[in-house]
Amino acid sequence: MSAETSAVAARPRSSLNTATVKHASLAEAVAAASRAGFAAVGLWRDQVQETGPRTAARIVAEAGLRVSSLCRGGFLTADDDAGITAALDDNKRAVEEAAAVGTSELVMVLGGLPGSTPGGPPAPGADRGLVAARVRAADRLADLVPFAAAHGVRLALEPLHPLFAADRAVLSTLGQALDLAAPFPPSVVGVVIDTYHVWWDPELAAQVARAGAEERISSYQVCDWALPLAPDALLSRRHVGDGYVDFAAVTRWVAAAGYRGDVETEIFNEDVWRADVDATAATVLERYERHVEPHLGP
Amino acid sequence: MSAETSAVAARPRSSLNTATVKHASLAEAVAAASRAGFAAVGLWRDQVQETGPRTAARIVAEAGLRVSSLCRGGFLTADDDAGITAALDDNKRAVEEAAAVGTSELVMVLGGLPGSTPGGPPAPGADRGLVAARVRAADRLADLVPFAAAHGVRLALEPLHPLFAADRAVLSTLGQALDLAAPFPPSVVGVVIDTYHVWWDPELAAQVARAGAEERISSYQVCDWALPLAPDALLSRRHVGDGYVDFAAVTRWVAAAGYRGDVETEIFNEDVWRADVDATAATVLERYERHVEPHLGP
Image 1 (cartoon, one colour):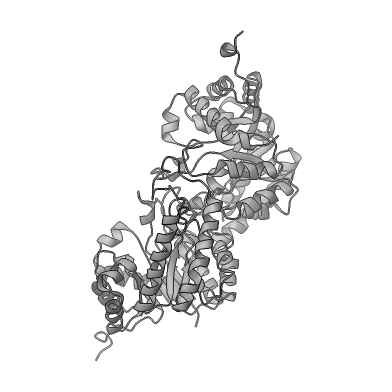
Image 2 (cartoon, each protein chain N blue to C red):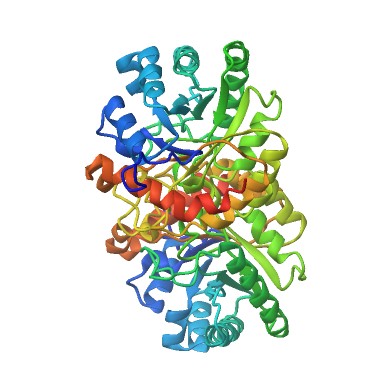
């Protein structure tokens, strides 16, 4: 068998978040990830719920891959009893799904201000109490910790770019995430380091080191920041190398912090979603090999 | 003279940044600010250069107003000798213009990554060295401090929303601005607190208090954050009250920090710019009276 025709060697820490190939089914996404040479996939709850978590786990395992994380729980900022109960119930289901699909890492996006509209202006009479919303999210996290611990699942707090502070995530920096995690064991509350969301942070090097020292790095996610933003700002993420992020620097900080887990590429972008799934998987892996892997250390 | 026909009583700390009425001349903007009842105006260098700074100062004084700040110096991230020399020369002119127009506060926007394009993707071969760009900006600030001190002008460092970290300002948080200011006397290097840029910051209350304790608050600027962003993200600023910012909370922090200076409203927004100048000035003042002034303290 010549080198040209041999099976692609899996890159041992590479993971394709399936949101990057949004229009593929779970089976299609897993097959494409496997063909391209990924070692793992990051899954989303809607996909996992479609097949059921045990079927999803089997599809991934039969392709020889691992599940690096499940996206996502969170949305913990409700200020009314019904909203709080619904959020806790939904997050408990998310914890169970993470355990069933075979990952310890449940990515948590904390949610925006009550009365915000995703990508839009405040609803009439909307709350502007950002400080109070952050306190409520912390309280809900405390409510969920025992359940997560009992299921062996880590709540992986993901700070989102301050661009999304009003409507999607009152958690805006890695330092804030680590402060929020501090009261709980690192086996139960971790943090996600997503280059798109944190690349700009003047405290990033220090907080990545802290995250490592505190053993809280649940996931390292990569994609690039560029301008202009998409009309829906959420869909502005780019392939690694197409924007302004210094992947060599950030990746070295993550490696120096002792992170040895998977590196997920997660891109929400209409152009990427329109592309052929195998072509996207190949591009993602090539960019990973070029811009990230050389700086990951041993 | 009845109350109805008396001259509008000036709100003593209110300032209209003339970028809010971008299409008005300096004289038109000053006249509108005076008619509406502002106490001060924030000026821009292009306008001041058109009339000359002494004429600009006279126009403002004859209207019974003050100049609260001059926008703007900065753009200090160049990595080549010619770019560095040009930036230092331009900033020295800006310092002279601030002194001549009668304000002690020169607003500084530090600039983006070399090779960035405003609102666009990186140029081919563009620099991604954010950490190094921040170090260069600090070095240029040190170069400028003696000149500013000699002219009695304070370099007012303005952190911009992380949305602009790549293309406009590598200075992204108030804490970073205070760290950058720390080596220099507070009479020569200050900071701008602009709600649009810093409202999301989990460290905001603490850093505002620090800015006050260190006597570095050069300016408090207000406008609102809402979504969706404008196609040119720079033009997404809204009238106070139309977005997600908690003006009561932030204004109380600024007041508690001891700030007793002017409060500038600065809005870049095509819709606002298309509106009648007097109508805009009246709206700005009404929003200031409703959402900001009650929380400013004595």
